[in-house]
Length: 183
Image 1 (cartoon, rainbow, N blue to C red):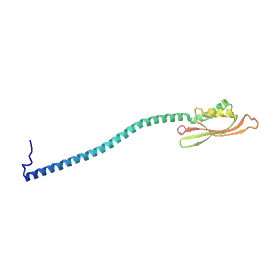
Image 2: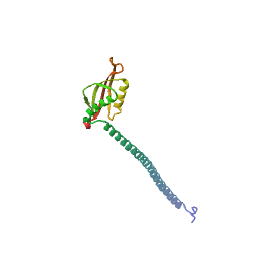
Image 3: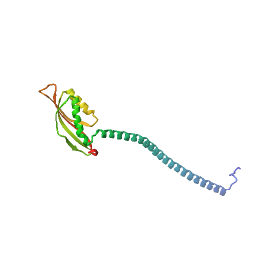
Image 4: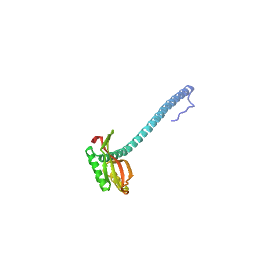
């Protein structure tokens, strides 16, 4: 079907033009609303994609954090196992005698047990007067450090022994810690 515009009068042409303009305006509003809708949807889609990527990162990190928590719990357990219970403190200080004997260090005197309390633990310490050579003292401290418990050398003083040049006078302060839960 062929449409001939030449046979139309002015009224018909004006009507046709008005109808064409109305259709064009309606189509432009429809297209414009679709474009705005697509832009809004596109922005929302980008935001959702970013949120999904962030969630994926958190999920990935969650496993890493779970593994770190497990490792830290193991370390805490290992450290708690190294902290003696209160009733073990005298035994622990008696073990110092055995370590000294194996290291060929002579215990001259032992100070009284003292303690101080903090928020998470109680610290017990003793001062020791010892006699021995440098190498023996090194073995003694090495055995203290490698024992199964936390033992800290707080202070050490070495002076010459005028009566025996191969042995030195040693003043040593050692401490151990007890968890507040075990007191």
